[in-house]
Image: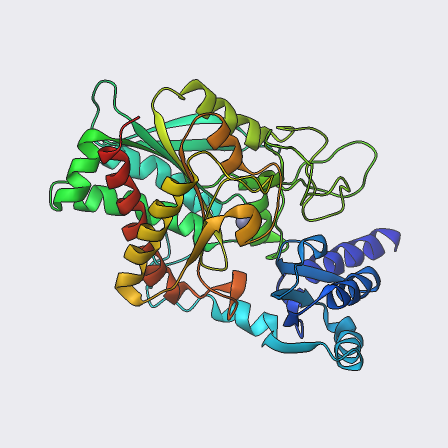
Length: 417
Ligand SMILES: [Zn+2]
């Protein structure tokens, strides 16, 4: 009887975290004007289960901004009453998260295995890294740069024609587990590289003169968890003594003003910086690889979602980098190029002022290592679907992002340092 009870409890617990979990859940957008509104949202967040989508936590809300957050079904009427009683302007971005999440899988591609126009689980991506490397031995080599907390291998693809002393661009995807469009882009980039090499003059030149290091998923454990237990998981899956809460925000875990601002020391928070800089095996492996290849890496690109932004250092401080004028001009030209395909508008600027201050990010760290062209991309969309971007948007999103990455690659070639 006890065993049966335990089984039932386990079944209920796992059901709670999978599909049904999001039944009736809503995503709200609140229009914040002043400090009074911010204080109201702090009060709301302290008494209700609120999952902040944009910004990443309640502490990062700024005046004259919008705030997107997810509310569990049982708290919705409380939250709506609160917003109305306090005359906060808001709209409902998603009225039932479960149906939006089901609608994610709207790809017309019927493939059962790997597809560039579908979201692939880690098992499929892992097999793909092996296959794409073995099918293109003259252009791609695969290596392992480390293992995750749960013991998965972190594969890195080196894409380019082998040659001596080539400059390199490092690009990673999948820092935050729920940002599924991000790993989809890294896969798309590799496919486009091998598909257009020898057929399109720019890509051909890039691969002959540059190497691209592509890390398809940084936070593999978290990504697996979004497929198996909780689609809205963000952090790593590491555990530490003294807390029951799981996971560290990998993009608050780098040694760049670590945990000074825009990050939390509370392990239960979504922006937990970890017990120390590079405490996470995943961030440590990434940082070690970059440190060991600093002489060749000329650009660092990290792909996130959502909000359509192109950010450059600093985020850990309001100070500007000594390359601010150049980075600003490059970002401006890059987002202009991106918009030529589908008209998608990006904003751009230094992280701290353009979105919010956040210490411990990989772009700031890479810049301070001496990698001048260091950018964070926040891909589509602006909140209509948020993290639940449908598969039918993978193609247009990746196509336009390709233009941006190629623009940067061309710039890196023309501006050696
Ligand atoms: Zn992210």
